[in-house]
Image: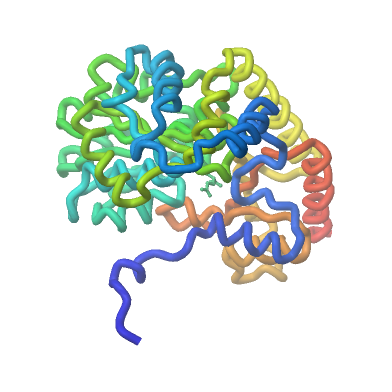
Length: 392
Ligand code: GLN
């Protein structure tokens, strides 16, 4: 067979998505890839049924249907605190995944350096490779997942073109404070670099933490590319609706990248999801209340069965420390990935191995999520309790 590109040999498939496949094969409760097991809001489903009968069924404008972009500009304009031009400052993409890839392809030349916090969402590594960028990793140090601003400055001094800020942060649940964002932003301005944000969990920020958009900070709009998606906010991860918001010149070029990558996001789905973008504030309050309750319930359950975990400030992910199990003779030499595979087959719960998120040698953490109905969380906790029997 002729040789494939060198590029494809430099990264693996996504471990997050792989764990879902293994989980499904074995009928486990899937707490690995983050997506809810409950329906989207009724109004959105009704709008989808209507779109099925009334259209649109053909391409929308490549950078997003007009009504969808207008609704987005209105909603996100409030979050960012400025008027967003739906013609010039938004590109609608196939999910947050394409939004991030599109941002990277738009700003990076091969060899450009981009700072990435570690732990990071798995995609950023592949985004960097595919766009030719070289990541510089900045550790987020547990338990608070704080970072050393001097390392960020050092990265910019080395000429980093951009820094990726996932806020709230997958997988560690960190919510960057306004002060932290201002400090990062100040450096980005000083060194004339971009901040690329991933804000897909913006509505899952638990009190007393609050979400600040980087683009809302003084002087930052011109230096920020905000990547986001409707997946988590409206429980429609399979619809693949995402977007970028940024200054006109960036967006003008991001539109070209997006157009030749995918042409556009699904037209009927944009039509239906526009209804969601127009929901009143009470929708987001209720969503947060739901996840706040699920978080408390899941963490309490983990405490009851004695599993060590972090307390996420945002997102629906929890990192569990599995060192006590890895120390048992039967797991001698196991990697976290092998432990997760064992867990799927023997405990019936799927997790993502922490090593897929860390630059550092980390083998003692696994990630679970709690975007599940209460009965499923109960069953998952009952199964996880069996882990403790291993220690007897
Ligand atoms: N963000 C989700 C996770 O980390 C999954 C997103 C995806 O697989 N596209 O599990």
